[in-house]
Image (cartoon, rainbow, N blue to C red; front, side):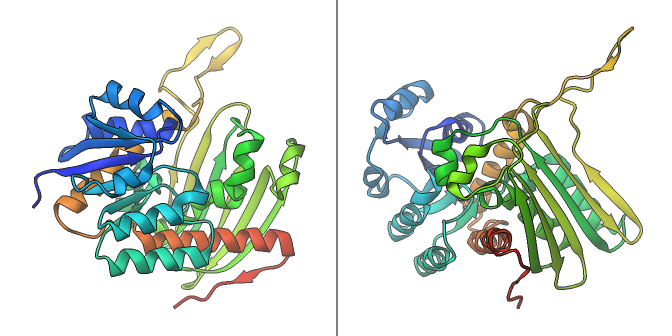
Length: 336
C-alpha cells in the first residue's frame, strides 16, 4: 500500500475549496501539494490559507508537475473532457466532479484515455458516500426489504443558480437529476432500459432561453423489471430537500429528512423545526467520505467504486432524459 497520495485541485470555487480543504486536513494518506484556478490571485490565496507550497493559474503547470500523483478536477462541465484527457496523458489519477463530460462521444474518448494510460478515475457522485445512503445500501444487500422493486428520488433546491450557470450547466436533467439516476442504479443494482421525462417552467422564465426547465420528472424502467421516478425542482423556497425511497418485496427504506437538527420548538403557535438550507449542510460528510474513498483506492491500487464507466452510464441516462423531454417520447437505452 502507498503511504501518501500527493494531490492537486483544479478549480477553487466553493466546492473546489471544500475538496482542497478536506485533502489538506481531513483525508488520511492525502497530501495537498498544489492548487490551481484561472482567476488571478485565487490559487495563491487558497494556497496560503491551506499551507500549500505550489499554486498556479495554468492547469498545464499541474499536469507537468512530477510531484503530483492525483488531480481533483472541480472545473466547469465544458472543461472536463480536456482536463481529464490531459490528466490521463500525464499519468495522474483523476477525481472529477459530475457529469464526467458534456457529451457521450467525449465520455467514450476520455474513458479510452483513462484506460489506455493505466490511471484510475472516480466521478463525484457523493450521495453514494453519504452515511444514510451507505446504511440503506447495506440493509438492502442484507435482504431486509427483499428484492428492490422501485426507486423514488426527490431533489429540490430553492437556491436557483444565475443565468451564467444555467447557460453552461447542461440543463436540469444533466446538472441535478443525474445524482438520482446514479443513486437508482446504486440501490436497485440494475441498468436503465427506458427513459421518459417531462418538464415545465413554473417560475424561472429565464431558463427557457437555454432550453431548460425548472421542474422535471423522469420515469425509468430497468432491465430486470424494476422501475423508478425522479423529481427535480429549482423551486423549493423552504430549503434544500433531498429524499429517496426504495420499495422492495418485503419492505421499504426511506432516506432523508428536511430537519437540519433533531430539535423541535413547541409554542402556542405550534411545533416547528429548522429546515436544511443548502447542499453543504446536507452533504458535507458525503463530500469528505467520497474523497476518503478515492484516496484509499489509490493507496491500495484499486479501481474506485464509482468510476468512469459509471460516469458515462449516468450521463447516458441524463442525455436520454433531456432528449425525451424535448422530443416528447420514451427513449430506449442499449442495455448489455
